[in-house]
Length: 121
Image (tube, rainbow, N blue to C red):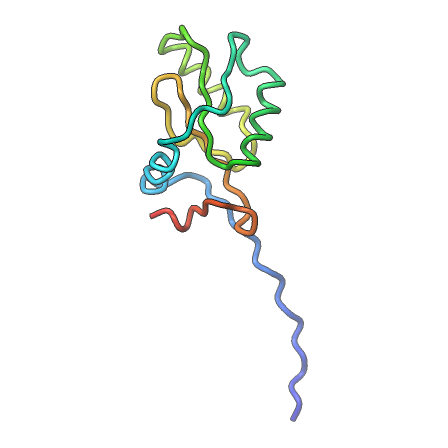
């Protein structure tokens, strides 16, 4: 008896994380420790040019540091962080903030990614 050929199943789509676990956040912070900020936000804040550069750098590096403007008080930092969170590309997470330095991570498809969240434990 010959078996009827079955149609092959389509490849399962990657399900992106909706939030980072504390273990993943800690592992990403450890990986980012030695990094220097690749983007510095100027006094004009998050302009279209800064956001375009941010998207490009995240696509290239996945894990980056961003530096907020100097001479900002705690309230301004929180406001800048909230604005940044609204403007971030899809599947991008704020890993943490120390002073005026923010750590960002972009989750990519596993085929293209250098850092896989499932491996961070």
